[in-house]
Length: 149
Image 1: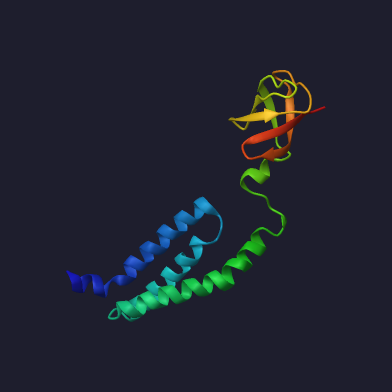
Image 2: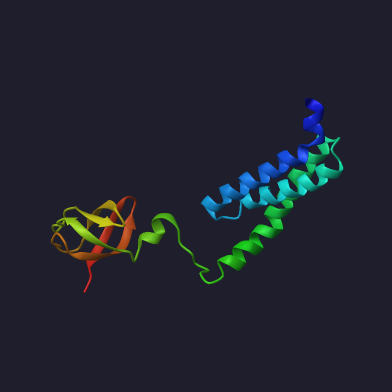
């Protein structure tokens, strides 16, 4: 049984490469893709050199590292070239629009719903429930909003 696995390691490396590609679809950072490329290259080597598992692991590590250093920056530059200052996570909230679900009183907090999420919000002036607002700043988990015209 062990001999079978040693003779067919290319199948395992191909499976690892496919799993890494599927995981890459969830992230989009082109990080896991580098390990996928390394696994596919290792599968090709394993098809011709089935004896040495140590060499296969070294090839996986080296090709994945080279891919991280050279291919990933090119992929990020190519696929994100239209948006050089791409914001993510909380930083992307500024400029988003939502609806006040709990009235915001002056010097008090209210609630704003943005894309199905409810945020604790404050404003420089009172804003009634149902008013459309825009996020102008964010501090931790509290957003600052202003009414949209």
